[in-house]
Amino acid sequence: MSPSARNLILSNAATLWLAIALRADIGWLMWPYWVQSVIIGWYARKRMLHLGKFSTKGFKSGGKPVPETEKGKRWAANFFALHYGFFHLGYLIFLLGGHLFRNASDPALLLACGVSYLFSQRQTYEVQHAADLRGRPNLGKIMATPYLRIVPMHLGMLLCGGIGFSIGALILFAVLKTATDIGLDAIDRRMAERGATTASKPAA
Image 1 (cartoon, one colour):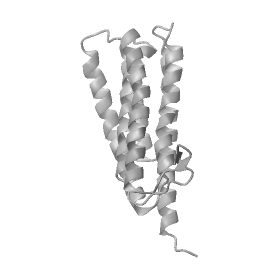
Image 2: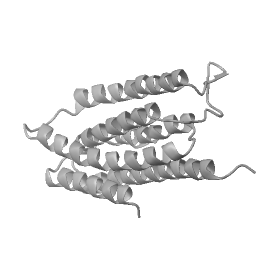
Image 3: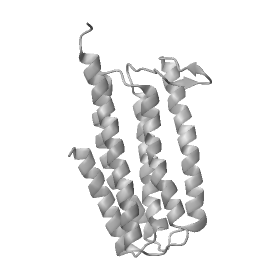
Image 4: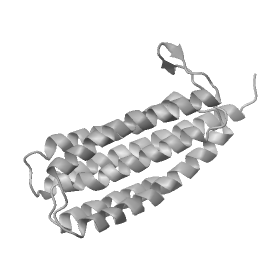
């Protein structure tokens, strides 16, 4: 197991333990997961902007290939920030409308969960960025993978409508979220390492 995957498990386990200790519902649990998703989006944009050599094979905009230029890279990063941010603004409005904090201490606990996940994601980014610099990763794939985070958040919205405190529901949602985290982490690392390995091979 990679250090980043282990840190993801520990971070999500701590968040789950906190939710159970507070007898919170799934709506509360979605707050730290929303913060995590925003952190992932921020690092994904940073990763795109700091690419050296990159490919845009299969990546099109308006029916035209995205150019493998600094302008194309910045366009992709800014489009991602706008589109990904739009989804998370919608999630934020949903949470503010139906799942406000119950206690004055909740924002501080949320901040602690966010800081824990920030360190984990920074480690993941550093590994990915180092591999990116050795290779020629696909810009479109880097932009697409963070959207896997939206799947468990959609499930959370469907589940948390009429469910109060339920250890079983909290564990189920936490497992789904953690599995998605680990899957995305593995996909990102494999994609970066494959690109670095391919770039290092001499031409035939």
